[in-house]
Amino acid sequence: MKKLYDIEQLHYYASLFSGNVVQRSLKYNDYSAIFECLHRYDSDLMSRGLTYWDYFDYVYRILEKNYRNEYVYKNTLIKGYIVKEYSLKETKVFNEFRIGSSIADLAMFNGTSKAFEIKTELDNDKRLASQLGEYARLMEESYLVVSADLVDKYRSDVDKSVGIISLCRQGRSLKIERLRKARKNSCVDIDILMSSVRCDEYRWMVKTAYGSLPDVSDFEMFDACKDLLNRLSSIKLQRLFLDAVKKRKNSTGLLKSVPRSANLLCLSMDWNERYFAKLNELYSQPIKM
Image (cartoon, rainbow, N blue to C red; front, side, top):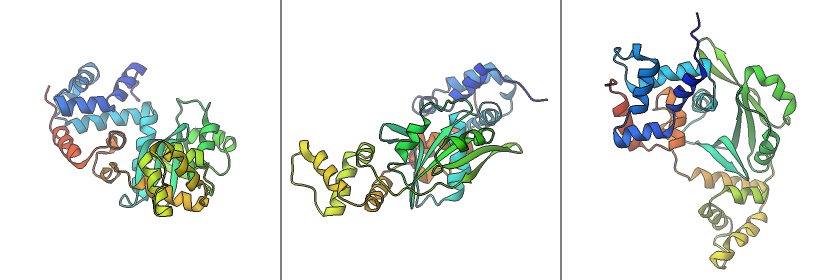
């Protein structure tokens, strides 16, 4: 018989996967949020010698079955699709990547730039068209990630250039399946580009394309760089944008090392090797109340 969980308990479980909970345990040796959750809902587990990672995985499995929020979708997409299908040596993945005035749930850069927009069963699609529209003005490929139950609804609603990825249950776990490949976009909107890259990145793009920066004041630099970049072909701009973003340092390279339930935590908190090694040392120990 399937165990039932009330929404308050599921919200509490979901809160364990916040950066604040992990940071407090690492920086201040404060495990109070984890302890309170155990006392309140899982006191029967306290004598089993679980490690912190064990408990996180236990809670995560409950969320997978009963409360598939954005964390579960993103985490499954990272582990079940990106890590599985792509070489992390050649790939950078970013959580919440700004594209114009929108923020893509996940963005991936390897040989191409890809944006992923997630719509869970708990979301509405109010801004979906405008979000996907902005992604198409910069990113080479855009994907919509939805529950298998909602595929038919969204398949007819979104532009056929948008790829569709479904999240469905396979036995006791969740599975990611690409149902429609995205069509490659070949245009770049200069306004979207300039609002998506950092100052050092658009300067690097100009220097790479022209050999030097324009001889103007810092106050005029943005507009001068924008003008020069706007003279380049879309294909050249896409390549420069891709190469510039791939220079950013982030924690993609650690994704194969972290526990299954913590992939999104790794990306969103941008763990470095030293941080993860210390955290892994603490969370691999049995929970001591």
